Amino acid sequence: MNKYFLFSSLFATSCTPQADSMDVSKDKNVLFIVVDDLTTTLGCYGHPVVKTPNIDRLAGIGVKFNHAYCNFAVSNPSRSSFLTGLKPETTTILDNVKSLQSILGDRITLPYLFRKNGYHTMSLGKIFHGGMEHNDLKAWDEIYSFGATEIGKTGEKRNMTGGALKWCEWMAAEGEDEDQADGQIARKAVEFISAKRDKPFFLAVGFHKPHDPFYAPRKYFDMYPLEICNPPVLPQGWVAPYKHTLPTETAVFDKFTDQDKREFLRSYWACCSFLDAQVGKLLKALEESGQIDNTLIIFMGDHGYHLGEHNWWNKVTIFEKGTNAPFIVAGQSLGKKGVESDAMFEFIDIYPTLAELFSLHDTPQYLEGRSFSAVLRNPSLKFRTSVRAVIRRGEMLGRTVKTDKWRYTEWDNGDKGMELYDQENDPVEYNNLATSQAHATIIAEMKKLLYQKD
Image 1 (cartoon, one colour):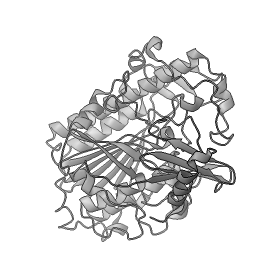
Image 2 (tube, rainbow, N blue to C red):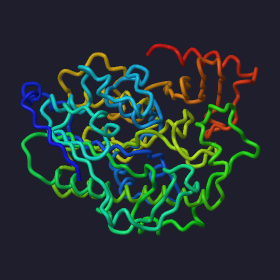
Image 3 (tube, rainbow, N blue to C red):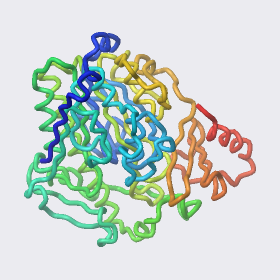
Image 4 (cartoon, rainbow, N blue to C red):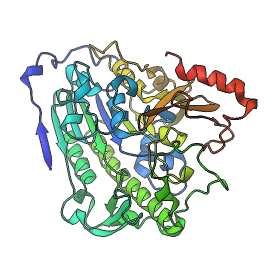
């Protein structure tokens, strides 16, 4: 275990509790759970096979959002965006290399704002992208990271690409949950939740799985026999509209056998059930400590993920599967519980929403998102009528805008191609209508939406 303690008298003045900052929200604390590479493969989102009883239970006491969208389907750009409340093009972080510290300056990240308002802040696992250069060190009273034990590094394993993609590997690991990093993260979170303290807390828990490589204790693999792991069937003859619609590794996945696809699904699903067990430990700790009724719980994936749709087995797209991610909120600040919401929002809206819910002082005026706190109080409300995202292919950007009915994408401002999908009749987006003259009016309207100012 690596751990870093950030007790700083340098920020003592700015981190002094402000007596009236907790008066508006009915919740005292925040449990902020961010999951790496998690798509909607959850029971509560209607998946017919994957077993996630604890996350389903969370949805049963909260609001499940069906239309939550990241602004960039890669970890570092997405997290840097929603934790600063700024669009990826504003942060200029468009890959996993550029560091947050290189662009942060005097900007106030979401956890730092809670710390400035008197909260005890703890980071467990992956919240910002990873590594000190990607973190906001001012934001945390404590930072912890973890790794697998020697036992947890052993087990039956296989690379599904014969080594062509080093990340594309599963392992049914020996040992128990706490022989893996996520099990240790859960244990530390339970310790934190169970301890008595005078200050409210902002506990950020960043679970790694189901991110590749797909390692989880063997018992979770045993939950999914290969014969029930049925890969999606693509429309006959489907090909991507452009070579840059998908990243460059598509040739590797073209060689996937049926066995490879089933093993990929089994290992991803096993990691989802492993994740679910860790979430259950956190919920139990909140219940046993009497804090389930005063803690706002946010559970989210950092972006979407393809599991064979478009013959793609990864992230880094601006399709629905790449940008849509699970998002569940539970707590006393909600107007209704055990319901779902079809309100659309972008991840940049998370920061201003929490800032408003908890009436946080010194909330930055430059935030580019908008608060959807009214939707939390009334989940039947509409919010955004369109959402946007970007992706990068080399030096070229792809931009997309989605409404209830359509998704429209431009590559290099349209110079390298356009894509239009009917979200109602083609929800997985296989039939590109952008070349159809019958849709010229729709394309013109969507183009305006794509570039309009919020």
